[in-house]
Each structure stands twice: as C-alpha cells, then as structure tokens.
Length: 185
Image (cartoon, rainbow, N blue to C red; front, side, top):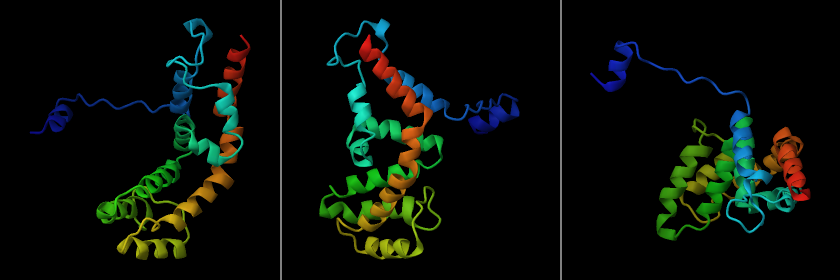
C-alpha cells in the first residue's frame, strides 16, 4: 500500500487550512519591507529589498514595473491574488524564449504552447481565437518571434486591466506608504 493510502487508512489525513484571500501577498510584502528597528541604516545593505523610489517608479508604467525583478515578484503575487498569474508567467516565458538558441526553439515553443496557448492548457492565457490560431501555426515551425503577437496581447491586457488595479491595491499602496514612512525616519 502506498504511503498516502496508508495515512488515509489510518485516518491521518490532514487538510491544509485555506489562507485568507491575499494573505500570501501580504506576507510576501511584509517580508520585503525593511523595518527601522532592524538596525538597517544603509540602502546598500543586502537586507533592504525595496526603496520607496523604486516602488514609486513602478507606477510610471507597466514596462518599468516588469523591468524590475522585485517589481515582477510583487506584481506576480498580486496577480496570484486575482487568479491571473498565468499572464505574467506567459510574458516571462516569452521573454526567456526570445533568448533561446535556435537548436532549442522547438522544445521551448512546444512547452509554452502546451502550457499557455492551446485551448485546454493548464494555464491558458486570455487571447482571442485568431491570435490563438496564428500562434499555434507559428509554434509548429518556431522562430524567436513565434509568440510575439500573443505576448503583446497579454501585455496590453495586463497594462489595461491588472496593472491599474495593482496600483490602486491595498498591498501596493501599503508597501509604498510603509517605505516612504521608513525613509522619513
């Protein structure tokens, strides 16, 4: 009998308690904000993850947010709280795909297509039928630009939909306010 079956038979199955909506995002952000009592005095310290200036720059454009590794992390957590992290994951996969050597294009294109583009994909992105079909054809004979149209569609969707909500979110505003308060101390 398998270990999982044994535990069920023994009545030792433990269910995970569901987390409160947004709890992951809140705990992630708290872990990234420097606390004044921690003795951090310099913004060059490794322990300081964010600066108020950096977080403020994220509000200038989605492009600036995505250009920041930390911005990507915070935005990804926000998208998870909205159940739409597949958009960010797809966009990042496309960025990585563009750096692929030609002998690995086919395998990576197939993985991206199966994971995000095909109709029954586990992390199916929200693109129109025409873009889905065009991308499917391009993925059959992949080039570095095979996913550009779908990536642009997802980017515009994030820029018009998720990004403005992110900037108005309690998580982003709290992070910014806390960092600005820490800067003044």
